[in-house]
Amino acid sequence: MNHYLSRRSFISRTAMAGGAVLLSNSILGQVKMASPNERVNLAGIGIGNRGGEVIKELYKTGLCNIVALCDVDMGAKHTQELIAMFPDVPRYQDFRKMFDEMGNKIDAVTVGTPDFAHFAITMMAIDLGKHVYVEKPMAKTFWEVELMMQKAKKFPKVVTQMGNQGHSEANYFQFKAWKDAGIIKDVTRIDAHMNMPRRWHGWDTKISNFPAAEKIPETLDWELWQMQTLGHNYNKDFINGQWRCWFDFGMGALGDWGAHILDTAHQFLNLGLPTAVEAVSLEGHNSFFFPMSSTLKFSFAARKKMPALDINWYDGLDNLPPIPEGYGVSGLDPNIPPPSTGKIEPAKLNPGKIIYGKDLTFKGGSHASTLQIIPEAKAKDLANKLPVVPDSPSNHFANFLKACKGQEETRSPFAIAGPLSQVFCLGVLAQRLNGKLQFDPQKKEIVNDKFAQALLVGPPPRKGWEQYYVV
Image (cartoon, rainbow, N blue to C red; front, side, top):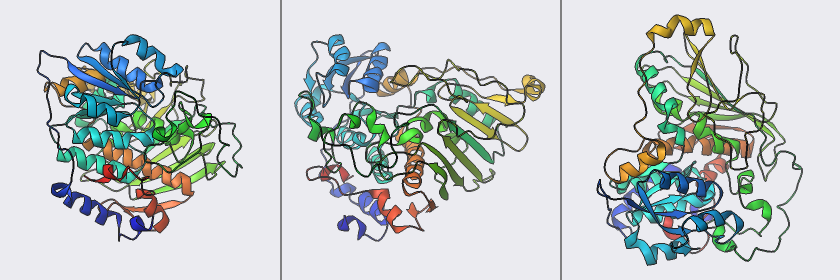
């Protein structure tokens, strides 16, 4: 840790990594673009739960062949469906061995692993010239996201896409059209909310240690599951989605749902990085897993002709934002897909946001959900003045594969998804430390808390994983 903290600032580390580009010992793979008439040869890394769903959606487009499957728990119950779908496809537990043996047969990869495991796989894939579809958020630490953006910039022909699938649906095109037409303007506040039960609700927030070690399943390579993170003993509450609960592994409700709720506002309002992030209220704060409820405030500076803006984030069962007059009913929106745990459970308010402009207020949901002007009378007055919203030319999965064939550009490449992911990294730091962080968006530094600044980078990687931190 001392090696990392002795460097003068985060931005100096960024400059050093950027300056190391020409000196890097990276593999410098050749990027292959599939021709319009051929399918993309795709390898799936992380084939159970959400990772498996992503592979199925990509395959369903008819634009790819599945040529390899990789999972650290290959053979476990949650991997069986994909194994049965593609019984003759080579299978691996270690992504490094897969790339070593099949690198020349792979055009692109999906990364559907836990948040903390995205980084090394993605860095190696881009080095090898493989296009990458990585689930959201891009990585667990601010620094890792920064390096992933730098790596993608170094290999401009490599196609990147973060898996916030609503970024290719109606919400994306409506927000853009309404912003361009001046319907959405002078936004000064957004209240974002995700109030459904989470996996850790009901846990004892007064615990003083991680759960006890348990017997490692025979199918699981536990050391590889941990990737570059520091060592933990195996426990069933660390795997199969439970990793979302822990500060050491996941990003909580904010990292899980933020990219589905705030993505369009972040992009089309040119928010970039905040000037401050504050944990306004945390219920059940502890050192190990996420609070039972969180209210966070993100402050963004004025941008060109747009005023300063605050985003207030609310999660927790009873932690709701103020509901404006004329909001109407919060019915279950069919455009919001269920989590991997099953159905969307009833909540007092659907996952979504309330957007406050100078003259208009909007309510919106998550994923593909479109905005509504509230109250209803105001919406009727403006009905004839609203611009035509174009249909999406492709869903998020087809958009990625068509980009691999040179036919489209991805709508959530790392250049767009990276700063959004970094906003969530800062929010998680505020949750973890239960405080207020003053942030310099230009230098990319926390200026009021040296410990928080160190956490932007995080602890050094385990031995054997250092190579992935070189651009």
